[in-house]
Amino acid sequence: MNANKKTDQNCPLCSDKRAHVFHQEESFGYSLTYYQCATCGLVFQHAADSPAADPSFYQETYRRVYQESEEPTPKDLWVQKRRALNSITFLKDKGLNSVGNALDIGASAGVLLDAFKAAYGCQVTGVEPGRVYRSFAQSKGLHMVSSLEELVNAKPKRFDLVSLMHVLEHLVDPLGTLKTLSQDLMTKDGRLLIGVPNFYAHDSYELAHLICFTPHSLRELVQQAGFEVLTVKAHGYHRSKLLKLYLTLLAKPLPEKTSVPEIKPDHQVSRKRQLGFLYRKFVQKAFPHSAWLPLETDKK
Image 1: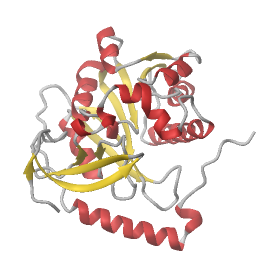
Image 2 (image 1 turned 120 degrees about the vertical axis):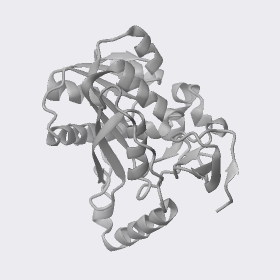
Image 3 (image 1 turned 120 degrees about the horizontal axis):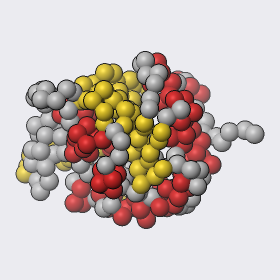
Image 4 (image 1 turned 90 degrees about the horizontal axis):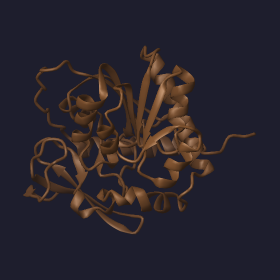
């Protein structure tokens, strides 16, 4: 690894500017550089160097780059449906049996919002910057807005469930976003649901992934934003029976004036990722049919 050096960007978690180059990668024709913060251990891209940090990227480019179509594809809708069903199961397993008003950030085609309505009979709102996907969700009668700023300015009724499923790793300022949710949009006893790739099992290095979360760094970020973490689950659903590719976290806002704990550094991140990928390599070879489950559209 390169020696620690000053950078021109604060760490998204602890704001330190000391970091070293952690990994370099090619993704969709772009050269990516990931840094690791010298203080807290978070692995991240510099927003100034990444086209995915530009808000217009999700309005105009993201879907074309990732799936060669601005319209929702059968594969994408299939994945969203599986994630939505898993999210509902997770929430009910954790005792969340009643929701009155739900918000989904990065709502895409509105599949998770539909699942919230079906499971809880609640009001729903989605934030989706992509115009085509937002229009698709609106065509189903869902209430959608284009940005979190637009929603905050509208001063909506506060939400008792807010979700960011595979969104947090895409954000330039995930800490600021979570603070906005806690302070401006959530009820005091609401629940926050987050899903991200697990850096110790998922490839993670992608153009649109500005941050690589470990179980530790995800907890630390959520705590620094003013939440109490209730649980973090590592799992492979819907892609693997054996590989813990994803992290799902449930949290609730801390009472007002509660002090936020000091950040605990994430140690031996590189070593843990190496061990995780040695295990992944072994599982893929020894149990190929369980290591990766097929992606397919629902059969009619």
